[in-house]
Image 1: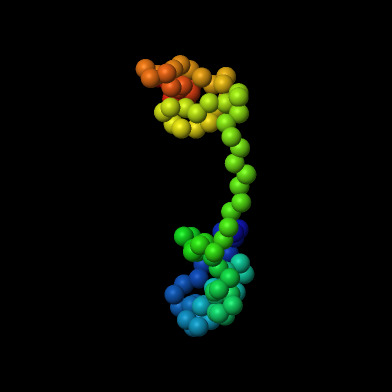
Image 2 (image 1 turned 90 degrees about the vertical axis):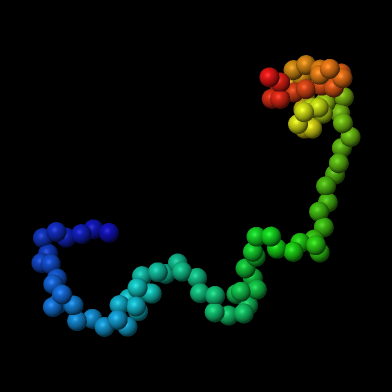
Length: 99
C-alpha cells in the first residue's frame, strides 16, 4: 500500500470513528475471506485424515520385469542399470543405498 508522507498526520483528537465503523471497514477489506456460516458449506470442506473407508482404489500391479530388481536395503524397484553391488547374501543393492 502506498503511503503519502506529505499528508498531514492524524492525532488522537482526530480519531472520532467508532469501533463498529472500524470493524465493518476491516471486513470490507478482506474480499477473499471465506465465510462458513451455512451447514452446506461446512459439509463440503474436507479435513486431513478424513474417513476414506468407503472409497476404492484400483491399481494395476505388474510383476517384476526382466530389466528390474528390488533393492535389498530400501525395497524399491529399480532398473538394472542402478545395481551398485550384491550384499553378502547375494541380494542386489541400488546405487542410492550403496555406501
